[in-house]
Image 1 (cartoon, rainbow, N blue to C red):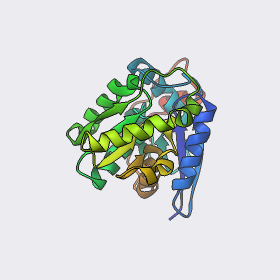
Image 2 (image 1 turned 180 degrees about the vertical axis):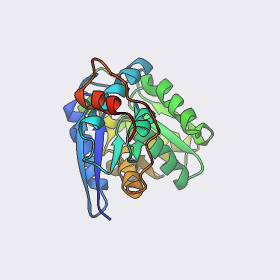
Image 3 (image 1 turned 90 degrees about the vertical axis):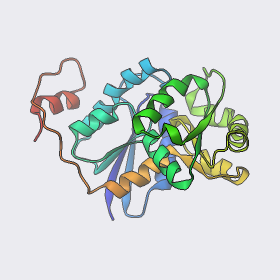
Image 4 (image 1 turned 30 degrees about the horizontal axis):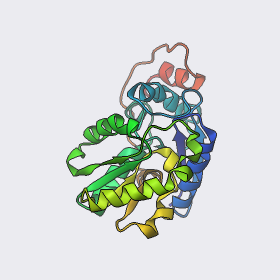
Length: 245
């Protein structure tokens, strides 16, 4: 099996992209290659629903800039901004890490908990669960306080807190699997796993594995007519202008 996977960090923080790249490479099946890129514009950290709305066009623009260079794509932002749009516009599988994590966790246990570094993310995560149709499988959320530091350092700075939240999710909420939610936590799951009494799911790893599995099962692009798109990146503008092939 050979495939080229493009991983897009939907925020603009290069240190987060570097974390995601390491986690993606570690999860890569033999024979596959991966490229990880940041959003070409947008925010340093995606936190609110408003942030999510801004991140969608940035994510699709990153995909459009490399169209034809990948066989499957992973949107490495918990919340999956732009994923639904990308599935309409591209003829390869596009996987969001929240949806990938939810489905992977559902196959590892009946109930999964969601742990992240700040509770500000919860409304967006709830929306994602409902969109994926898996809210009934969620045992609950364990999330930290407000965060305003370097997103690329949050995994190290809040490692002990994340570990305790994982344990609380298992011991108090009854989670049989725990998802570490958010691109800035990429790569943390294998480090915490020896100290947690349940499987830990890293969304980036799950997304890369699923993308590799789905590459080659390319969907047919949904029909749409070419339209003029103003003010966006050239790749996205060209994609809209040509319409469906």
